[in-house]
Image (tube, rainbow, N blue to C red; front, side, top):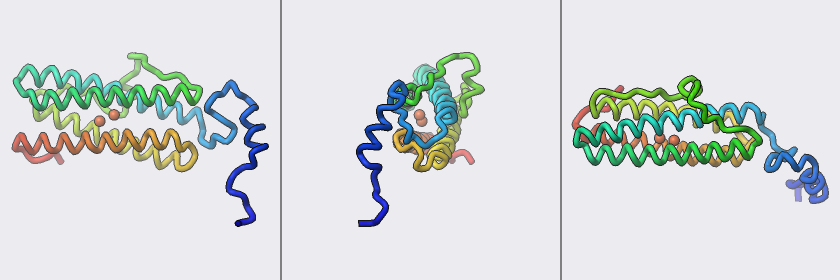
Length: 183
Ligand SMILES: [Fe+2]
Ligand SMILES: [Fe+2]
């Protein structure tokens, strides 16, 4: 056995857990800068909400121009972005913060933009751009958190994997439409 024990001894762990019980899931062992994590998560929440709105608009518009399979894909993405928003809001509350659902300033907090797009191809390209922005910002958050908040990291990695799938879906849609992917 190494001379430095891997775990904090049980007595210390129990003592620490009893202190500040009102902070719930946030124990003194929480290593990250909680305020910054909550702020970053609120930006991610705004990003997801903007993506829900954009995908829903695209869903109804694509339906209107008889592009049913693309419209279905947009709807599925919209619902998955909504699930991400809910996961993030739940984590913010666990961390003792408040999820910001205010429409005021939503676009300023969001990393991704709300672009309506004129044609089906336009819509898909805009969604792809938004996914790529989300992918980069989630990857950056995961790297920034490092080992300081494993639960948030695990959640973000799950969301990141799905955004990568979304981006892949959109590239396939562009290929199906017989156009080169945007550069
Ligand atoms: Fe998402
Ligand atoms: Fe996505």
